[in-house]
Length: 77
Image (cartoon, rainbow, N blue to C red; front, side, top):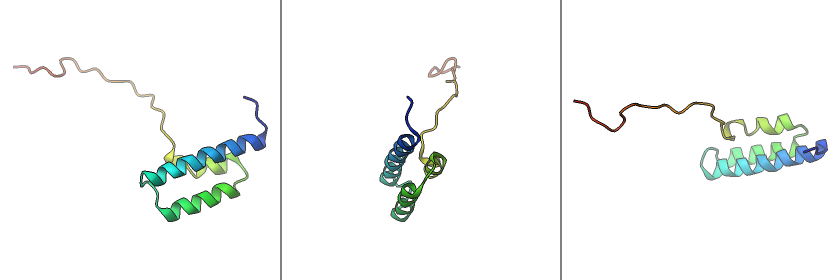
């Protein structure tokens, strides 16, 4: 996707607003923090600024491998 810089920034702001709303709904941030961050999102002029406001609210992509336990659920004895 080849968006103009302003459109990319707007898209990031929309994502940030959704993440902040979800963070508030899940009680990860309180009302004051929500208000502070929402205002900062509106003032942001760079994508990095917007992303910094939601870093800990973004889903973490796991690269961990699932572990295999031989004999799980069986009792030895």
